[in-house]
Image (cartoon, rainbow, N blue to C red; front, top):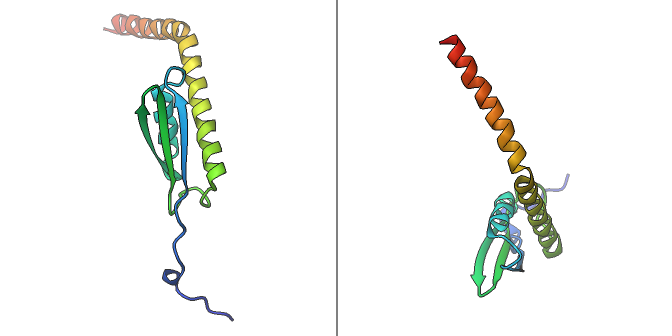
Amino acid sequence: MRLMPPAAKFPAASPIEVAVDFDSNIQSLSALDAAAYRLIGTATCQVDRAGDRYLCRLVSSANPQKGAVLSSDELKERFLNLVADENLRIRVAEKTEGVRNVILALAFGALAANQNDAG
């Protein structure tokens, strides 16, 4: 049986840092914030505005909650995928807002009618 030295003797992995920038005329801040939120446990994200650009500084977590520490390319790819997903969510919400409002109005209208009948 081979004994391993205590973990404290191993140097801690250096955090991975990645910078990703976006044109603020094209990219919404809300999608960047939502993508950053979804990275919690994997990395931190600081979003700064510089002129007409958003600069997102990603720093990997030392002890990620979901698996191993990501490489810089993997971290950037994950963030870009999350931003694309949030952009799609926003577009779908905008396109379906009218239908969603009709459904809610009908549902709440029926609920109000049922309460008036019961009262």
